[in-house]
Amino acid sequence: MPILKMDNVNKDIISLRLKSITESATLEMTRRSRELKARGMDIINLSIGEPDFNTPDPVKEAAKKAIDNNITHYPPVAGFRELQEAIAEKLKRDNNLNFTPEQIVVSNGAKQSLANIFLSILNPGDEVIIAAPYWVSYADIIKMAGGKVVALSTGIEDNFKLNPEKLEAAINGKTKAFLFNSPSNPTGMVYSVEEIAGLVNVLKNHPNILVVSDEIYEHINYSGKHVSIASFSEVKEQTVVVNGVSKCYAMTGWRIGYMAGPLFLAKACTKLQGQYTSGPGTISQMAALKAMKNPPQDSEYIREMVSAFKNRRDLLVKNIGKIPGIKTYIPAGAFYLFPDVSSYFGKTDGETVINNATDFSLYLLDKAHVAVVTGEAFGDPNCIRISYATSSSLLEEAVKRIKATLKKLN
Image 1 (cartoon, helix red, strand yellow):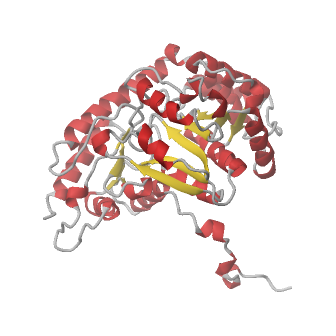
Image 2: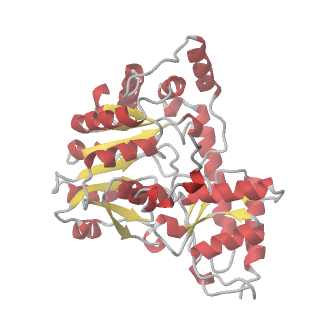
Image 3: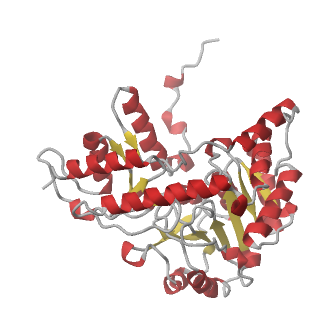
C-alpha cells in the first residue's frame, strides 16, 4: 500500500470553523521573538502575559510528592474532589462567594474554562457582549462556538471602562452572554464597586443573560481588594466565575483553571470536557491544591510579586510618558500598559510607513528589537499592549530603544 503524503491532501479539508479564527496575536509575537532570538538577535520580549517569577517552592514540592505517591492515574473529569473543595473554600474566603464543589469544573487553564462555557451555551447567531479592548482569545473562542461577538468600544479617555448605558443599548433578543473582565487584560484597568453596581443594575433586568466573569488577575491589583461581580446578589444566580492559578502563583505552565457557576452549566461543561480532554493533569492539580490553600493575605510570595509589578508599572508609565506622541494612563491592575500610539500613523522613516498599530508593532520589533502586541488584536486599532512582566532593567532598555527608534519617524 502506498504511503499517503500529506502534501497531496487537499488543503480545503481544513474546516470553515478553523479558517474563521486567527492565531493568538500574543503567541504569534512571542513565536516571532523566539525565532529572532534563535538567529542571534537581542530581542526584548514585552509581548507575553506571563509572570517572570518562578512557581513557589511549596507548590513545586506538592507536585513532587504527588509523583512519589503515584497520583498519576486518570482523574475525575471535573477535577479531584479535594481540589474542587479547596476552590470552593477559596471563593468563600477571598470573594465571599458560596459555591458547592459540584458547581466547580477544573480545566486545562482558564482559557479552556471559557471555551467550555461558550461551547456549552452558544447556538449559531447567539450574541455575546464584550467590552473592547478585550483579551485576544475572547472573540475567537466565541466565534469557534458559533456565536457572534458584539464588541462595545471604550477609549483611553474613559479608562477603557464600559458604561451601563452602552451595555443596555447593546442588549437584544439574541444576547446570550456578557463577558466581563476586571482587572483587565490588555488595559490593566479595574472597575470600582460603584462601576460594577452600575452594570449590575442593567444585567439584573435580563436574568436570561449569562454573566461570564474572568477574574484571572484578581490578586494583581494595586487599587485595593478585588470585587467579583458575582458577589452582587442581584446577578449571583446568572453569573459564572472563571479563574485559575497561572498569574498570581506564576503557574502558567501547569495549565490549571476553573469555572464556578450554576449547577446546570457545571454539568454541561463536565459533559463537554469529558469528550475532548477529560480532567486536567493529576500532578498539576495537586500543585494547584497547595496554592489554593494559601490565603493571599498571608502569602509573602504574592505580596512581593505584586509589589514588584507595581514598581515596574510606575517605572514604565513614567518613562514611556516622556516619549512624544504616546498617550498613556496609570493601570490599576494586571501587568500591562495599553498606550495610544495613533499619532504615529502616517509617519515614515523614508522606507517604512506606519499605517496602523500592527505596522507600529512590527516596526518596533524590526528596528528596536522590542516585541509588543498590536492593539488591533484586542479590538482597539489605536493602541499597543506592553507587558511589564519582566525586569526593571529590561523595561528601561526597551523604552530607550523605542524612543530612539521612533525619533526616526517623520
